[in-house]
Image (tube, rainbow, N blue to C red; front, side, top):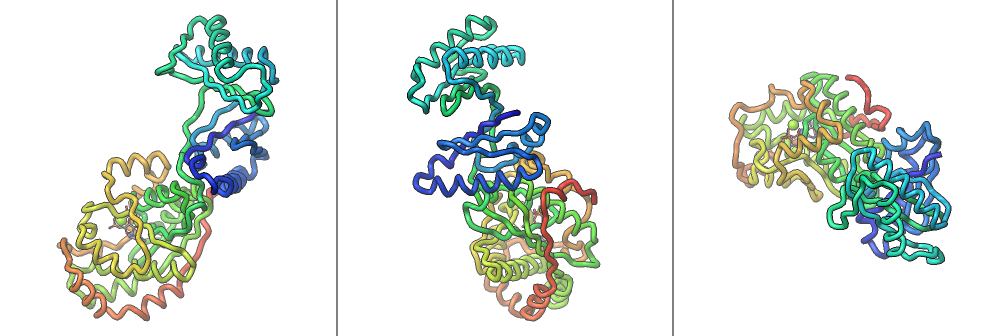
Length: 393
Ligand code: ATP
Ligand code: MG
């Protein structure tokens, strides 16, 4: 049997709502642990996960993806006696020394006040015991390479090498958002970042079949599935947008076509979101990254949105976005060559600083109402789950 101890992060700041946040976290963890036969135990603001030893790896993979915890560690519960606790600290210290660690400090928390030593007493006694038994290790209170933690609760827990959690707030604690998900690098990262603030996501993808390939659709499905490894299952709405793109090409100056297409996407996404009781839209836009994302063009794009638009990457450098994409595992899929927006429809010289009044007038003249409603009626809905994250395209 293996026990993991989870440390809650920002959650602990939430005062009166804390219980609700903990319940959401527990629900998410239960969903993510399905199939591992692990058991969750929640006492006094600490979460414990118990599993059979041969399931350790699986559980570790889940904890590594769980949003809303500051950290986690494998721990072995021991008897609540001073001898057993010091012995466990020495065992942990030996493991640290074997892993090349040279400096440490002990941190102790005594939730059970009947334990004979107080927190300070535990720190001193355990520090002395470790220094005597493991001479390679030295105490460094300011900058220890590792901390050995002791918690005295219904049992005593000692743990060393602990893992950093994803932090943030548990998914589902901060409302629902509709992610405009293209096959690119940015929008999956934007979705992940909002999930990390507790937002539950649905996704919308506009495709221009047959100008864009079936592979492009599968790629977006896979991206949504990878996001769902962190953000719980994601409902993906695929909307056929070919007729709208053709209308834009027919009726508007070529240089405006990208901005007008983005306006149509925002319009459709806003309608769909409101009908599904979703409160905001999320995009991967980053200021001035491409022509359609200058501040003037964003003003044009946003004018059709109907809902608040969240752009978590607006001030982010591309390199940093790529780093997050690699870390969460979307990058390799995002760079597959299938285009999400047909190059046939992209102008050679897109407008850089569109004027809002002109944008609105051009958009009106497209008379998209019926086409938009038809496109929304023809949506395809799929549930993207973590099981699909490894699909090959
Ligand atoms: P990404 O890497 O997310 O595609 P990008 O830098 O390529 O972003 P654009 O292609 O201009 O930028 O798209 C800006 C944003 O508009 C995207 O981040 C995404 O949120 C949304 N978007 C673009 N194309 C589509 C699409 N086909 N379906 C759904 N959303 C889209
Ligand atoms: Mg793109």
